[in-house]
Amino acid sequence: MRILKQLPEWQKVVICLCLLLLPALSASAEKTNWVDKDYDFHKIQKALIYDVVLTDTAEMDNDLLEQVLREDYLKNAMRPKYKVIRPDKAAVLSPDNPNEAADVYIKAELLKWHDDSYIKEAYTSWETRHAKRTKKLPNGSKVEEDYSYTVPVHHPARTIYTSTVRLRFEVFDSKTNKRVMARDELRLRDDSHHGQQGIFGRISKSFFDDLGKQIRQ
Image 1 (cartoon, helix red, strand yellow):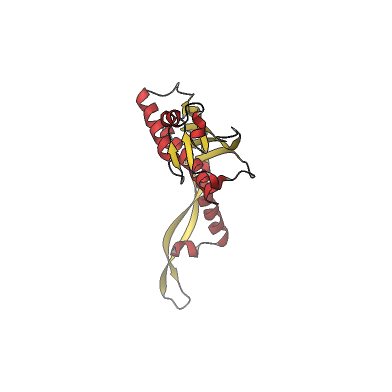
Image 2: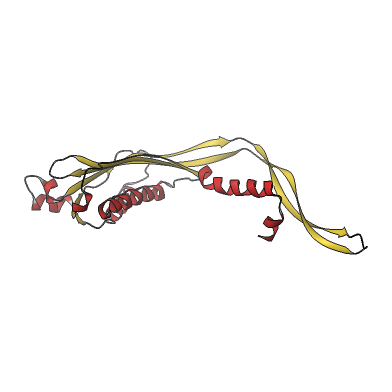
């Protein structure tokens, strides 16, 4: 912190901007979100949770991963303050129309699960270095002071691995079958190889946390 205070104002601004941009450079997201503003989410006390449909499984190594994803999805689906009803129980409670065993029913689909890579071209950046030097004062005495300088740093081309996940969620009112909330979200993360499982969990958690907020509002 002491060194930062000694830097010129323009260098402080550049450093702060770089720190702010770091998260954006490593990940990106595209989210389409919709909520029926006229729907009364407060009345939701029971939710029928269907298993997530895993549409894109071409790059999944084994069925064990599929099971882990379904369990992770169900764990996040239990986050809001409602009673979770599973399809087998719904069929018993309401044989003619299982959906009516709850106030809403929720469906989700995995649309994309992909590993990829791209080449980041070589580039040169200017970086700040810090050092000490001895300065002679007018009275002949000497003092040691800190100073900074910039140097060019070459960054060679390198391969950037990426992980991509896209999920779609839909919430329906059980009595009308009318969709009341939906989200389609794609997340891509750089410097990630086979990191989709973590992204899958974060997308699911984000959706059900937001659904819980709708119910509490």
